[in-house]
Figure 1 (cartoon, rainbow, N blue to C red):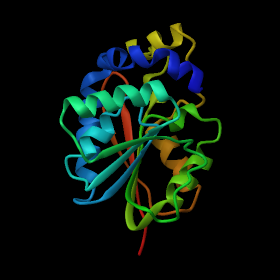
Figure 2 (figure 1 turned 90 degrees about the horizontal axis):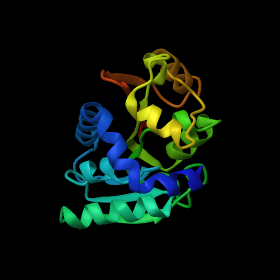
Figure 3 (figure 1 turned 60 degrees about the vertical axis):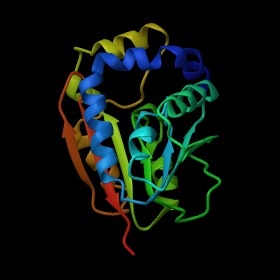
Figure 4 (figure 1 turned 45 degrees about the vertical axis):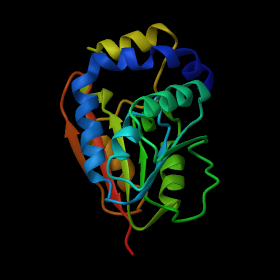
Amino acid sequence: MSTFWDRVAWLYDLVERSNRAVNAAAAARVAGLVPKGARVLDCAAGTGEFSLAAAERAETVLCTDLSLPMLDRARKKAKKRGLTNISFAQRDITALPDRDGTFEAVIAANVLHLLQKPENAVRELWRVTAPGGRLILPTYLQGRVGTAYGTMIKIYQGVGFHYEHAFTSETYQMLLESLNLAPVLVEVIPGRVPEGIAVLEKSI
């Protein structure tokens, strides 16, 4: 997976513009869900749009991805915007080195549908979420698109992309609820490729 994303890092932001209204609304909504002054971990961050949005409210943001070229683009965008509370690190979303309960907000956007076993990543993200904190999981709902794939998906498929799950809001919620971690709320942002934003709050 990292090899593919390394290869398309230069193209990523351009392709994402085909679904720009959904992506912008999702980033803004996620930023609003970040507790003010929180320590934030963003996993599978790509070129960092959710990290950059979260930085407006967070104390610190750790922007991580398995792809170093993606992180390089995220770093340049943060510098261009003058953000100084973001750091960057290469991380595997299924094997994080952080201690239990390190972050008041943990974000993993538009990645769970790519994983064969997304539940493994969710459990790992939950582990590093602090008591009283939030796990925020925005994910594209390709199941809502059906066979009429959006431009974004068609372009990615043309260069070798595939995804493991075509979630609807209902099947996405069912997956997360099956893990028995916390009550799950899923908010849908409609659009060309809709986004389901799931939120799980960890009890104190």
